[in-house]
Image 1 (cartoon, rainbow, N blue to C red):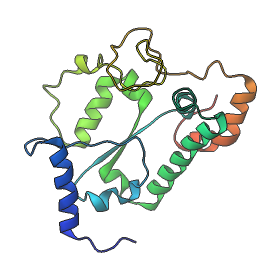
Image 2 (image 1 turned 180 degrees about the vertical axis):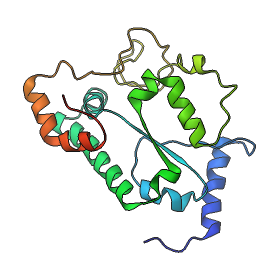
Image 3 (image 1 turned 60 degrees about the vertical axis):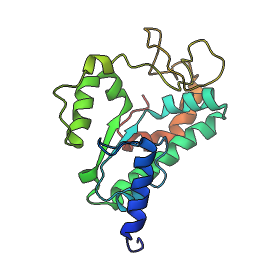
Amino acid sequence: SFPTRRSSDLDGLNLFLRGRARTQNFRLITKTPSISGLRYFQYLFPNAKCVILIRDGRDVAASVMTGFRKRFEKSVQIWVNAGIYLIDTINLDPNFSENHLIIRYEDLVEHTTETLKEIFDHFSLDHSTYDFDKAATTPIFGSSFFRGGEDKVHWKPVPLTEEFKTFRRWENWDKKRHRQFRDIAGETMNQLGYSCE
């Protein structure tokens, strides 16, 4: 249950975000790498819509291990915890799909135009003049693998090249590691539409 909404609190949060964006005349978009607090989204932003980007847990674990130097089990569990939270949130809210859209990262990369159109439609935005070709060549930001020659993860743009590998960074795992992943994350993977095979 939520406390009674106070419009002054909600207006203050929206004004804060718009102040950070330094504009009042465009559609405001904000993002976060975590779905923690997703259940409060509609309470905090009653007139907004949300897009949730999910990704194969194996690629997430591989990224966390490389970019943040965490152990394998911990890296997998981070993804599992987020997946379970998302599944529980969906099950708790019968109107979830009205304001939330779940997009697979793999679809966004492999079917960029179609997936972006789905996102634009979710927000009731006209995409007739959008440059989809340019979107497909957007630079890479913050990749734990593709750093443009730098040693550490950074947030500077790195031009997209053919050597950038987006998927299946876990292919070099041995059988034991694949088995460990299935034991920890197999059920959550299936519930989110992924296969461990």
